Each structure stands twice: as structure tokens, then as C-alpha cells.
Image 1 (cartoon, rainbow, N blue to C red):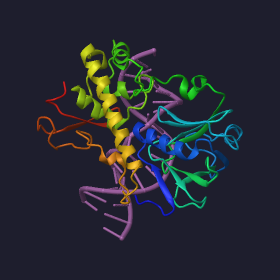
Image 2: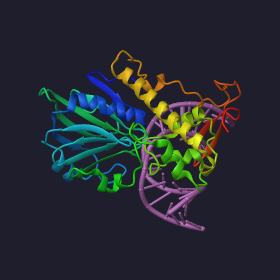
Image 3: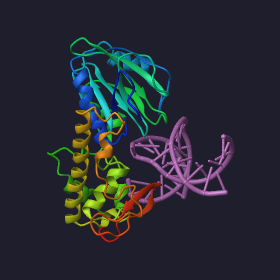
Image 4: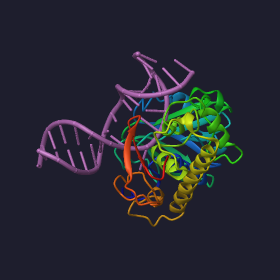
Length: 290
DNA sequence: CGGGTTACCTGACGGC
DNA sequence: TGCCGTCAGGTAACCC
């Protein structure tokens, strides 16, 4: 996809690293500023858009924090949070005008940044699996969307290995589905699940309850490394807008197995295999992963 | 409760 | 060229 004139392509390809980079980008322009108006061009995306609540909580209030929880982008004000999710196909674009430049633009938000400059955030999402909503108050953890979410995999304070080992006991679900379950740990999407399991030497179809302590340690490290390397790559792209061919940081990440069915495993040369688990393609090396 | 499937929606792509 | 089936990075609602 080509960059639009007068715009900054903030993100596409929404897995956790992309949302993390998106949060960093939006933070630079929005922190200390405010959203002065929001226009919605349909009443629902994945769910109904609570326009009145969004306006109450966000519009005209200073943006105190721009952050991320799971794959949700959060703009905090003194009244609550604006919450955006990009689903499978969403993008958030910073543009210089409210004029629609892409089909499937469902909302535009006028942003006055901390220096008083005006920009427009365009929410684009062809498949409409994304969502824009708002949460009142200062505590997200009580809200239905956030209440049952697992820990952040990149939280350095959290003992992810112990958590994965403990929660997986007696579980017969495939380990790939287990780590993609947001109740277990958030932010591990289909691509990075395959990549992390390759790094950890675990087959995606392995029953979660059969992993040993050492496997959980390796898997926790693999998840963190895979995600943080992708964040670093996205960040690199974010600082370097010369990729006008539209390539984003995501494509700079070396994927070992995902999307490489039939190609040689980068460790041993065996042909990468692909199976379907829970309807999602899952790539692995039958030699390196047990 | 756990585990598996389905549904939501558009667009891109390959085969015929 | 066009039609059709399949697939795509997410997630919650279902059913058994």
C-alpha cells in the first residue's frame, strides 16, 4: 500500500508489536493535546459505537496518556479512556485534513496536539472487525473488555514462564491455541505464535499440559524475544519514513517458519510444514520442534 | 468449565 | 475476462 499524500501511515498489520508502535507514534502527537471533535460514518464496527460515551469521555479533554493494553490502543483523559482496536484489517492514519482519502474510513478525529497544531486521525478498517469504544473512570480492569485479559507478555516484572507452566497443567488444548488465548497471555497473534514456538522448539499441536518447566521457560523467552524484536523493527520504520514503497517494519522481521511452507527450515534445512489449528495456519519444522 | 467451531466482513489471489 | 472457492494478522459467541 502506498503512503497517501499529506499523511503519515501510522500502522497497519495489527499484531501486538504494530499496536505498540502505533501507541508510541500517537503518543508523540497526541500526548498533552486533545481531540476536539470526532465524526463517525457508521453506527457500528464489530459492535455498536457508543458515540455519546466517547464524546463525554474524550472530546475536549486533555490527553494524559497514550498507551496500549493487549491489542487495544488507549487514550486516557481525566474522565476515562478512548479505546481503539484495529481487528484484522484496521489502520489509524494521521492526516492533515478530514477529507476521506481511503475507502472504509469509518471515523475521523480532530486532534489538536500539544503545540496546538491540528491533525486528523482517520480510522480505516475494511473488514470492520475492529472497534472504537470508551471506558469511563480510571480503572480499566473492571470493564468487560479488559476484566478477563491475561498478563502483558512484555512486562519485565511478570514471571511469564511460571504463569504459562502453571496455567497449562491438565490442559489438552494445543500449545499454539493456548498461547494465543488472551485469557492466558495477551498479544500473541497467529504469526508470532508460530514464530515463538519455532524458537522454543515446541510443535504447535503439542498438548499444552505436556510441556515441562524448561519448555515453559524457553517458550516465555521466545514469546518475549519475538515480540520485542518486532517492536524494535517497527520502531525503526517509524523513525524512518523513507519506506515510501509502503513496506512497514513488520516485513523487516525475519520470519523463520510463518508463510514458508515447503521452504527449508533455517536451522536444519528440513521442509517447513503447515497445518491448521483452530482454523488458523500454523507452520513448523518437524525436526526442530518436538 | 474446557475445547472446538462458527460468525462477523471485505478484498486479494489462484484456478478454471 | 469473469466467476468461484479459499484465505487473511482477531476475538467472542456458540455448542457439546
